[in-house]
Amino acid sequence: MDQIESARARLEHAAGLPAVLDAAYDAFEQMLPVIVDQQDRGGGAFAAFVMSGAAAANGRNAVAAAPSLPSAGPGDLAAAATRPARDLTTEAAATILAGLGQLLSRRLAAAGELSADAGDRVACAEAFRHAASICLLLGGTPEP
Image (cartoon, rainbow, N blue to C red; front, side, top):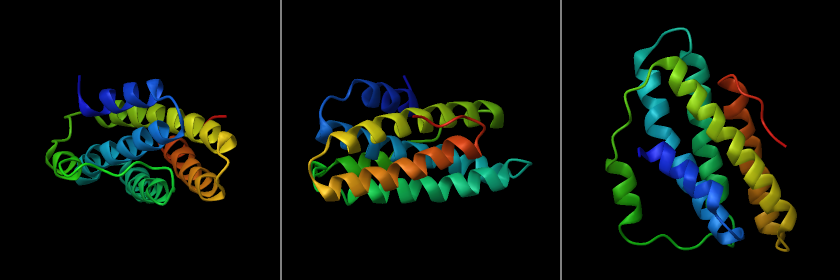
């Protein structure tokens, strides 16, 4: 299973606010190498991938500001930075990333509604907006 599929499965099965936030952070992080790979190819979808890259980085940063996000272990960031992007066609990458953006938007909206902490609600709302943007830019329909 590649990193995007793993991030998707982790996000689908995350239970509780800290787990959803942690999985959402990882999902945004795993989107970035795939987006960069597509940007490097140029083509007709270049602008959509560039804007999606900004949205993924901003979504990750919004989640990082959530008070309930668990602290990262010492090897987590280094491992994420060394993972190679999967070789995908532009269409396949857009479909996979739009689907992950859709799942992110659904999970973040639900997490934000359930949180008692205002900081978590704001972080989830901001990250939701960026996930929905990725979904729209790459041809999907964001939820909820």
